[in-house]
Image 1 (cartoon, rainbow, N blue to C red):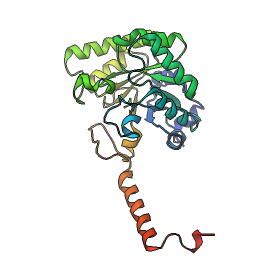
Image 2 (cartoon, rainbow, N blue to C red):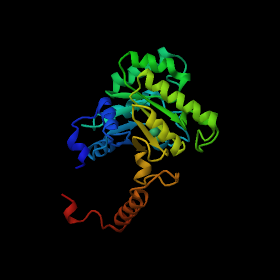
Image 3 (cartoon, protein in one colour):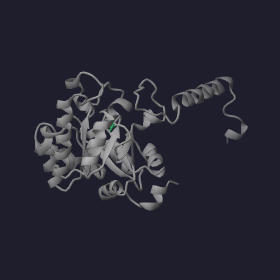
Image 4 (spheres, rainbow, N blue to C red):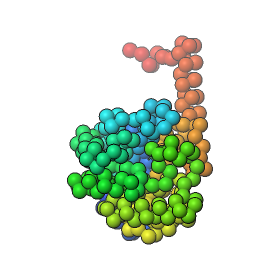
Length: 272
Ligand code: KIV
């Protein structure tokens, strides 16, 4: 059992801000289903993100764009049934908050009401300011997401590191400050230079959770299927694999198939 698990019975948005103040790093992982959420929660993970990366990982799409609000709600409600301690944050999917603040609020309310999630996450800065404010005004906690925001992949045209140039770095800093001032409880910074991410983390009171943003931020997030090696084609520099489940599972399936074919499975003890 982790130390953090003993200290906090339930993680709230306030717990995360307290953690930053106390210099305690925040752990965040993705989950999209009940079984995985139960394991991730039980291990003591502070935040579970029902990411729209479900579009890639669960549905096999090339980008996060195709996943729908209904599908996100399905994943989120499965995750909620598996957790006891983690804060569950759900991505509002592409096309469900960008067109106007009323639509953004409607989408956020559906996620909170129909899944039982604790907070929502949105991608972008000043372009979505009014939507962020509208959601927050309704009492729904919002996590921001800046840097390489995958819902804008067709605008970027590449998955390379963002904000390396001064102009984009300046905009990112302003966007982060704006999100804090609006009342967001945390911000994910994805694939940006470590020095920039550290500067942002030091200048804000809300936690900055990084993915490919170096160690100078307040917490880290990884896609669970990547960090346990269930996926194996995706190999960015920032990814640390803690298991090689692709090989382990392939071996297990191979052994099962061989046992079925040879008649070794089931044996006498495995039947009635
Ligand atoms: O959808 C997702 O999994 C994410 C993380 C990569 C931060 O947004």
